[in-house]
Image 1 (cartoon, each protein chain N blue to C red):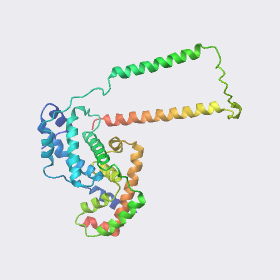
Image 2: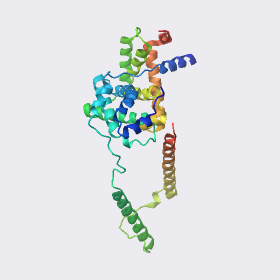
Image 3: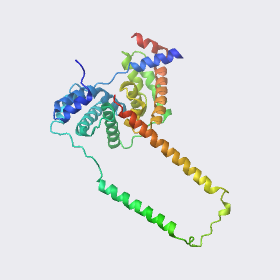
Image 4: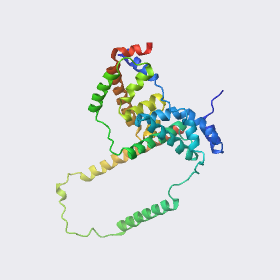
Length: 124
Length: 191
């Protein structure tokens, strides 16, 4: 089995690239003849637009929170009878637990993507 | 003569020395061509798409920040250009199921059997029998010498997903080599 793996690995080391036509480089150089390197665009979307959207969202959240905390009234009765007795005993704890797990998953993904970017940024 | 670093060549091109770009084209053309050929097996189309890749890379060269290797950046352009070419030219193309591939592989193995003229031809024949994305991942890893993380960037996948796909592709290739050459694969090295 080991010999088989070695044979296979040796086989993979023998891989060679396919070759394009002899004129390939010349064709590419002819194609870029009249072209210039495009200048770098720092942002694809105007940063003012992004800032405005963020500001509106933050404002909405703050207003909502303010309304929730300053309103002393209980929720109005909309006539919907929710039978909460049928829900499991610690239903809200389960929901909280699921949210924490989701949060941990997102955090892990975020940290691993950061790590990957840092690895790639190391000098070669 | 000492080989110029990619970064120095890029700097020179950005300073207006357009001719220096030919060095990069010479250096990477066979790799780009091979990666695209794994996805688009028709040689003429591969050549056109490879050319398009180098033109695109030239136009956006100023946007290359050097946060990854130039080759990784170039191969990711090659991957996306080949995929969008396939979507445009063959919108109805779907990847075959594994059973279909196995049956196809069997038939090809019977046809191409023993009188290969070189080791390179033999291995390339086997790789061409893999599904396109498996052939691409094998090519990026073994030929273009990209790491798992770099392949993840090129193919826009998670690194773990790349690991799994690479393992499966390797296994499939091993099966193809065994089916096509069996005991004779030892003899390949003596040719």
